[in-house]
Image (cartoon, rainbow, N blue to C red):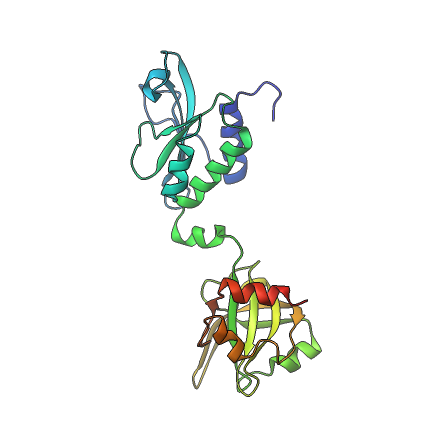
Length: 253
């Protein structure tokens, strides 16, 4: 950051550096209004404006800089609006848009965090999947098709059928079907979208992911009966994990 940059300039520089966004000045009457948008779906995710104080409900006519961002959590937006420096979205009041005062009332890092939230909230479905936090998955492994136990005895990193929605950074817990019927492995997803085309019998594979072994579980620790105690009654394909089961799996060292 440059030494004498204003908060407005720092925020604009942040958007350019992190998201490769360029300022767009769309209104002749308001040359200082700057729009930032996604490159794929062209949706706005932030607007920087200078507006009169009284338009925000403040006393005075001095023009102040604000950042308009969109949040996807209305309860969080409502909580912010009760704090100093936050207002109903100026120019865009619908759809959980809020205005953030850029005069130092709201710390720079907090403003950056809100801009990041807005970027995620307005992203395309494809980019939202990429931007989401790492996720934990319960994935079935059928010994009928592949000896995963033997594979991990040979290597700690193997290629596996990629489930829809799984991405690099996610955690996969492999549930080995009958006759084992238990979670045996915790793995990290290190690569996805590895080209692969296979179809035989009931098995069809369009892409592979690479998973790295992080932990082995005793076959008697997380049996199907234990999974049912945590609300898991079937593991027919990749699925999310209940919080209680995840806590038990992560606690097992």
